[in-house]
Amino acid sequence: DYSDMVHTAREIVRCNGFEDQITVIQGEIENVTLPVETVDVIISEWMGYCLLYEGMLTSVLSARDRFLCKKGGVMIPDKATIHAMACDDFLFMEDPIGKPFWDNVYGFNMSCVRAKM
Image (tube, rainbow, N blue to C red; front, side, top):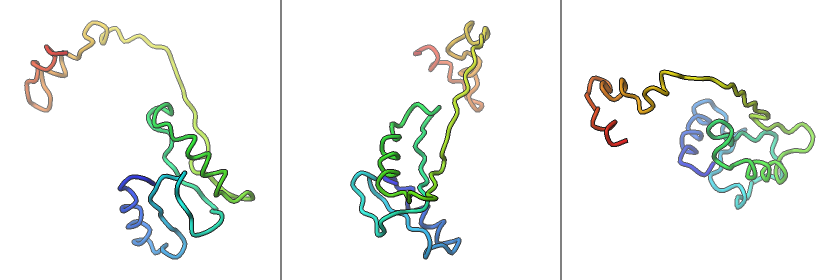
């Protein structure tokens, strides 16, 4: 992982007694050097919002090709599905900037924000 989430991941590994089995490495996968030749599992949050954003798929595939054990290696998650459906939200179309929302945002009148949208 390239983010600061690695610190939390290391803490989770430590708290659960897996320090001798799991190594968390921080860095861009294209530039990282592993202490082993292959790994059994690659866990990555590569999908982003709605499977469309983040642009991490090429990095995950690079990691797979470089490091994942060819026999029995697992990528988590290993598949994804997008479900789409056409719909019509006539209430939203009548008020696309959310008048009711801005009139009472957690008890605050923020209708001035709506006027600037």
